[in-house]
Image (cartoon, rainbow, N blue to C red; front, top):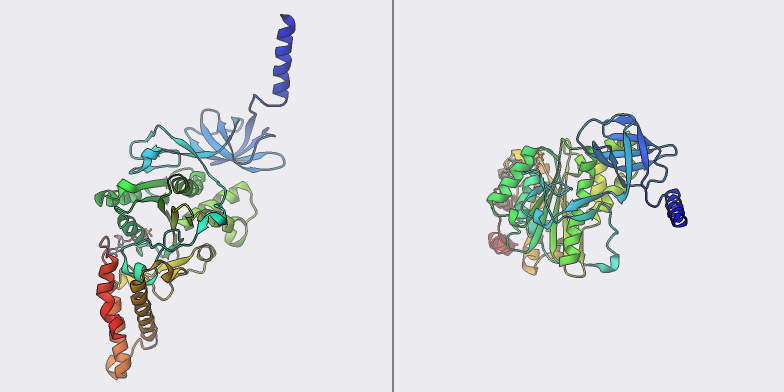
Length: 441
Ligand SMILES: Nc1ncnc2c1ncn2[C@@H]1O[C@H](COP(=O)(O)OP(=O)(O)OP(=O)(O)O)[C@@H](O)[C@H]1O
C-alpha cells in the first residue's frame, strides 16, 4: 500500500517538475495603466491568456529577457505591484455566439445593450492562417451599394477590399450604412466593426439599421472608446475571424466594415510604445503595415462560393490621403472611395471626389450595359472636373460651343449623381437615368 502511495507521489512530483499539471504564477512588478510588467513567468507563451488575481484578465503581449509584458483586456478593480498573475496555458481568444446577429456585441460575446453574455458561445482565434491562394477565386460578382457614384463609376465586387477615406463628417459611415441597408434580402451577412466610437454613436448606427430592417442580417461588433485599448486593437481581427467562419462553414457572402482603421492604428501605436517596441515612422511600430495587411488579406472570393468583402474606413486630416496609415492601406486595398469636405459643404452628397477615387477591379464586377454607361459617365465627369479646375473663373459664354456643351453635360452628370442618404438606386434605375448621356456620346 505504502509502495503504491510512494509511486503516486513520485509521479505527481515528476509531473510538477515538468510543469505539466500546474500553471505558473508570476508577480506584477510594474503597472502602467493597462500594461503590466510581470516577473516569474518563465515558460509562458506569446499571446497566452493570463488572469490577475480576481481583478483582471489579459494576454502576454511581449516576452523580454527578464520579464513578460501583459496587456489587460478586462479590469474590475485596480491592479497593484505584487498581485499574482496566473498563466492559463490557453491562447487568448475572442468569443462569438450565433445569436449575436441583430445585436451590438463585443469581442467576448457580451450584448452591450443588456450587458449579458450570450450562451452557446464558440471561441474565435484572434489570428488565423491566411486563406491559401489556391482557394481564392476571382472577384467578378458585384456587391451593390445602391449609390450611383459607386456602383456605376467605382464599383465594388464580392471579395473586394475597398477603402473609404475622408476627413471628419464627410459621410464615411453613411456610405457603409447605405451599403448595409442595400443588402436586404440578398443573403449577405453584414458585420459593422466600431473601433473607439462612443456608445451614443454606435447606438445611432444601431437605431438607423434597426429602423430599416437591416439588423436582421447585421452584427455590430463594438469596442467603445472607454474600453481597455487592447480590446480596441483585437476587435477587428475577431470580426474578420467571425466573417471567415461564416464564409468557410456556410459558404455565404459576408460584408465587413471597419470603422475606423486610423483609430485602430493610433491605439496600436499607443500600446506598442508602452510595451517598449521600437518606434518607426510617425512613432508607429515597425509591424504596423503587417498588422493592417494581415487583417485585410482576409477579404477574398473563396472557391466554395462564399466571400468576404471589406470596407475599411480611414479618417484623414486636412484631406491628406498620403499620410503613413492612409498610404499603407491604399496600397493594400483594391481601390478607394475618397470623400471631400468641399463637395460635402457644396451639397454634393455623397461627397465622392471622383478625381482621386479608384476601383482597381472596375468593370470586372459590372454588367456589360452598366460598364458601358459607367465608362462614358466617368470620362465626361472627369473631363468636366478637370476643365472646371482650369476655367474656374471663366465665363461660360466666352467658351467655344463644344466646350460649353461638354461643361453642360458634365454639370448635369454631377447633379444626377447627388443622392440623399438611404435612398438607394437599382442598377436599372441608374442605367435609365444616364442612358441619354451615352446616346449623346
Ligand atoms: N448622402 C447623404 N445625404 C444626406 N446626408 C448625408 C449623406 N451622407 C452623409 N450625410 C450626413 O452627414 C453627416 C455625417 O456623416 P457621417 O457620420 O457618415 O460622416 P463620417 O465621415 O463617418 O463622420 P465621423 O468623422 O464622425 O466618423 C451625418 O449626419 C449623415 O447623416
